[in-house]
Length: 235
Image 1 (tube, rainbow, N blue to C red):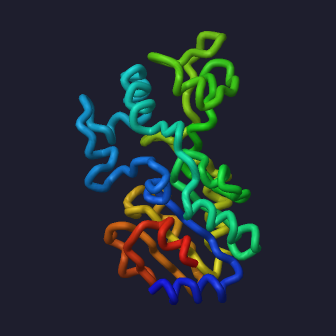
Image 2: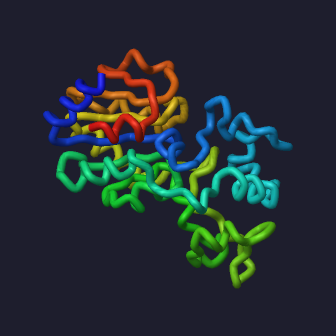
């Protein structure tokens, strides 16, 4: 299987990578749906509910308590997957990275064309005056982070019940539609509308790399079960 993946990469000229939380697990970040994922955490509220816009509005302080504990990884560094993708982009083969992650690790590894479907924890904005605040401002604050103007500072991440950015979606769709190879990795393909983007792929090589089997394995020409970084580092 690894030999087949290497051959696909070698013969493709317009590769797009679509990644989920599993891509960053080897960097020390938690995923959501695995046995020890965020949604299996024992918290006073259902974790999936905490990450909704309505919960943010009604229980703002509890949202930030959960967010800092489980969605912020200040010590995370890019892993082999991030670096390999940056290398493929530099060589001209990889045209875009589409990510569901909010950790900014793709850019830290050197990737330039990155579509962040769910935003970024590295960007935070005052809901009142719009002033930008960095990751540390929110992570190192206590309670509800407040701007100098008194407004609440919200991470630029897309919560449940919130819409994805139209420009980012359009860019991701165009990248997938023009690709001759799509590598989907580290995702259970259950979060929509993000997971639905792969239907725009019309190319030849459709690959899935994931630790566990998914309900969509049969739709892929090549499926490899394992850690994304370990597999891509062998290419």
